Amino acid sequence: MNKSMKKVTALVLTLALVMGVVVFPSYAAPKDVGGWVTVHKTNGDPDYSGDGFPPPAFMESKLEIKDAMNSVIAPNGSGVYENIPAGAKLELTYAFSLADGDGISEVYNYEKDDFFKIALPQGITFDAPLSGTITADHAGVTYDLVNWEIDTPSTHVTFKLTDEAAKDVDDPPRDEKSARWGKLTITGTFSPLSEGDPEETQIVFGTDIITVKREPLPTESTLTKSGTYNVTTNEITWTVGVEVPKGDTGLSYKGFTVIDEYSTNQKFVPGSFEVGGAAIADLTLDIDELSSPHSIKYTFTSDTTGDQTITYKTKPTEFDRLDGKENGESEHKNTVSLKRGEDSAADSQTATVLLDWFEKSGNVTTESTDTADIMKWTIKVHIPGTAGDSLTGARVVDILHKDLKLMQGDSAHPITITIGSFTDTPSLAARRMEIISM
Image (cartoon, rainbow, N blue to C red):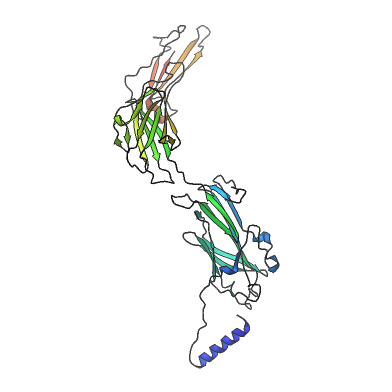
């Protein structure tokens, strides 16, 4: 508002008071001034440094994306960011300036609460703060330029001019309407995609449009596999998890086949196969225990959706390396795969149940120069499986070399048996037995 306009307003108010009528100054509703705002490119263009603005280096908008390990992800040769995963970090700097006029004859009139908006990239969870104030400097005087706020659900950031930024030409500290510019830096994290979410978003810096392509949701299922051993029943319970693809949560498994291959030192326990807790008759399964490895196949015959859990049992028939030549570890392996017809529908998964039955060690001791060497043997027997399981009817058989003589009945060198004496793994202490012979 110029001085002549102020005089007219004052005259109108004076006349209104003389006539007994109170007239309030009119208040214009806040307007969208986005057409008067320039968001600068990453190289600082357009260059307004000759119009009282900082040089382009200070007017650069910026974009940086880092992965979860804090390594910078660079765009491809076309400037497109590809396969950006959930959890990647984003830092955005918007450099903007407000024009004084159209450069010909019109001078733009900014009012308090006039606003402009900048569209934000989608699929981002922005970090706090989600609002604040941007200051500007004029002739060495700092003043509040705009108040900003990220809306819900984070589609735009809105900037509102302050009273200081919109003051008339004669009001300090804004004694001329020029050099209104500022920067906003915000950070955020790429959110996990859900089915139906767009896999592409854009970041706009003026006339520059930067495309960010997300890592696509998997269209294949995910398999999990685990096994637990019960020493009382001598059975391994195998659990297979089939998770629907995140990119196709309504997928029907009708016609899909789960193939489980297991090592030949175990056999299927009849009647143990279940899907989702429901028993599956053995006659509907394809069981092959003549080939190596053994296998069992199950095909979904009805429309089945959602995550699936399959369990069945095998019984170990052989325990490897229990001949005293090596420590007694018995390995039982199982690999699961999923097929749709002849095509793979998931990455296979392998689980191993390692039954650590015993450890054996020996050392030679010389008690005196008048005695022969004495060998001390230690066997630690483990009861594998879950704490609380028990094992009955088992025997420990240790065959001595023909050149060794057991010092049986020698009170100075007794055979000792200790139950649950080990302290290296307290939770298994009560499930171990130690045999020492000399």
